[in-house]
Amino acid sequence: MNAYTTARIALPPQPTHPNRQVGFGSAPVQPLSFFAAGSEIYAQGEKAGAFYQIEFGAVRIYRLLADGRRQISAFHLAGETFGFEADTTHHFFAEAINATAVRTFRVAAGVDMSRQLLPLALKGLSRAQEHLLVLGCQNAIERVAAFLIDMADRQGGLRQVELPMSRMDIGDYLGLTIETVSRVFTKLKEKGVIRLVNLRCVEIVRQDALRDMSE
Image 1 (tube, one colour):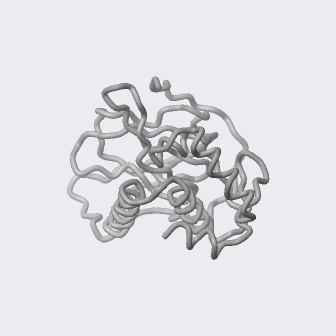
Image 2 (tube, rainbow, N blue to C red):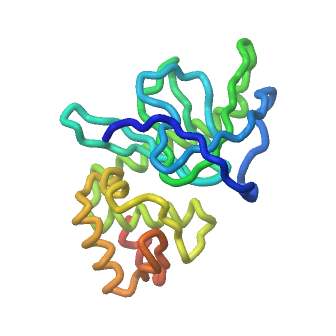
């Protein structure tokens, strides 16, 4: 996949996400930046030093492997924060999945924001560790089930889960082919565990059964 040039688009005002934090200590709140679907927010190798909060939309974090394959390491949804780095360089690409608005926060030199940022960084680390366990220990059905449970939990436990990402995105995140992802969705539907409302929305019919499959 080629990195896209950042595009700015004009969109109508969107409602504020209920979980969104307005500011981080003394870090100034920046105006919203708008990105069209597929637009690059930052690239691997670019200078880091800022972090980002999603007002609306969704973002994928990925790296291109030496053989040209894409490995998605994380998805971020409205109200979530991303872009943390251990050094001064980004190690992954960040790209808007759909029409997305983000706020950029830059920390002034000499300002200690560890108290505000540490919980967010630890939450991201915990999610990354859980993702590694999914990739290393679970079969295809278990991986997709764990993904759907995670997405439901992050959207407030709703029965109807919005999936802004494509089946190919899900495959690149779970280490599966797009054909395998599609087959698993069909199997879960046939078992009555989920209902496919459309390509971007899944209704969880039997949450306990889906959660059992994910463990």
